[in-house]
Length: 419
Image (cartoon, rainbow, N blue to C red):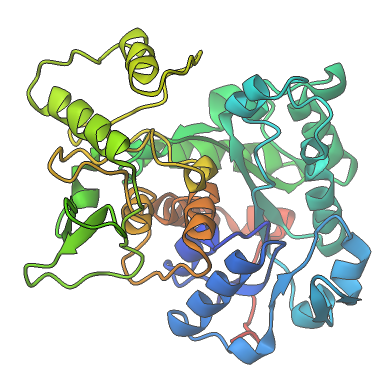
């Protein structure tokens, strides 16, 4: 007996991974439009969770083409599929998960864009999510996004107002105060990274729906730890990767020392200039001198070393005694803001280290190019946080009264033809 789930904008499966770890949920289908993430999630579902890879229920498609996604498609870019309805069959959809791409809501993205992302189509991808909720009528949904969604205002209308109204029109309720209730820092949820995210939990409207939503946020907040989780654990028991002084092909090499090398733990290639900067900055922290503690000092260092001006500081060394700074999708471009804390290694973090900071297990293999891997990790929901969300949903459902069960209609359904 498990809850049936569809995961939209699934990425490599951070949300799915956390929900499956509880053994209370079954993934009927998942959707993403980037091929490497789809292949990564397919492999994970089959190798770790025993799903039949031949069922092809991880769909590579553009969710904006909602009707085709539901009914089936043949497309030169995305291939062919019989559509979501064919994988759902007669099974009830208990829950929909998903986090529409956050770039349009990201504060950093708005700063970089000359129009503040006002005209970015991704502002309105939530509408496709709403259409899917309306079609499948799940009893609840989890909608994840960045903190910037709380202040995004395309077309001079708050995006959270647009989202609230869209769900209300199809008969669903979410909390009326997202900033107070729905903003969470994952470093207080067993994730060694400061990552603020908005978690919108919605349910079908009923006389008890408001209380159910309050219960969800109350329970989830109660699961936070007193102190954030420091990043040190993410770097433990990994082979060290040192600079190569005499190689023309590689800037770094892995020193094994009998420690097995986990998948996706290959170093980036760095210039000699960057290696010197990384060593300088990591030593500055480790020694306690902290000459480069301020943004002003880092901006000046960048100008001295590169001859270029910048309004923002480019470098950041991860502190082992604190949570890492947020792992972003931008990490696929460079790792200057995610420098390893060990000055002897003088490098940016590997894909595996980024995955650990996002709380992925070491047996989770990321496919595609190294850039693809960094990007999908940066876009993912940390699985440990996702698991706590899933446990919260289970808890509020199992502890409520029989009357509430009947009213809201959430129920455990038999799993058929899903695995």
